[in-house]
Length: 85
Image 1 (cartoon, rainbow, N blue to C red):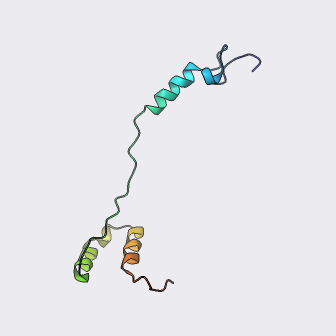
Image 2: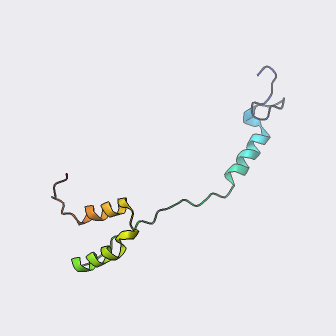
Image 3: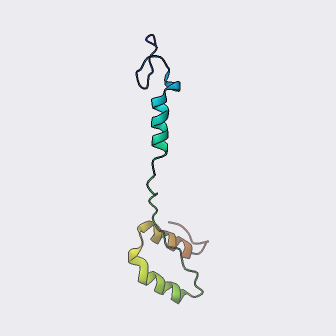
């Protein structure tokens, strides 16, 4: 502070809040293209009218589901009043 130099670029004569290098670095950083968010595709439970169709769907696709998805399907299939362990 006594030397009146910027804490960001260390050049005398201005403060960090007025630093042109800091502002330019901030602009360059925020305009950089962002990587797309990694989204895990969670399958949507098909709208089926009968249990045979649903059983066939689950049998054909169960190996491609992760554990959370499997548990989600099971939770949706259980009756609302089913006791939890």
